[in-house]
Length: 105
Image (cartoon, rainbow, N blue to C red; front, side):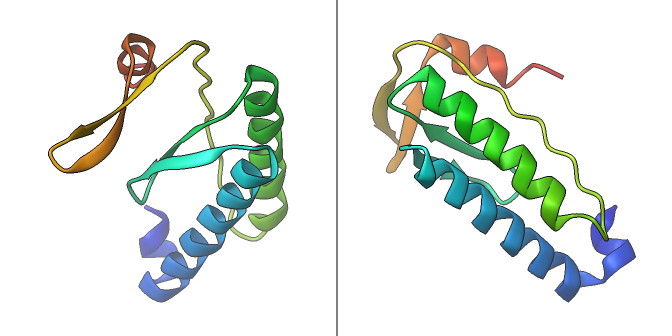
């Protein structure tokens, strides 16, 4: 577990920088972060092309910043319309393909 190797403070700083870089990639390609649970995030984009460009930017940013402590990420892209709903007082993106993508190993 990375937090054990780095120490809690160093790991929290690494995670903070990591998600800042991911957030920058999302915003730079016209996306909006919908959800961030601390170990993954969900974002929506105006087009599939912008989602792919953001995914590449996320991978490049992760590779640049994780040279001393290698981090790998997986990026899934669902294409299609989704609906934003309020469920249990939180905004949630609802779509059948999203439920399927959560189960991809």
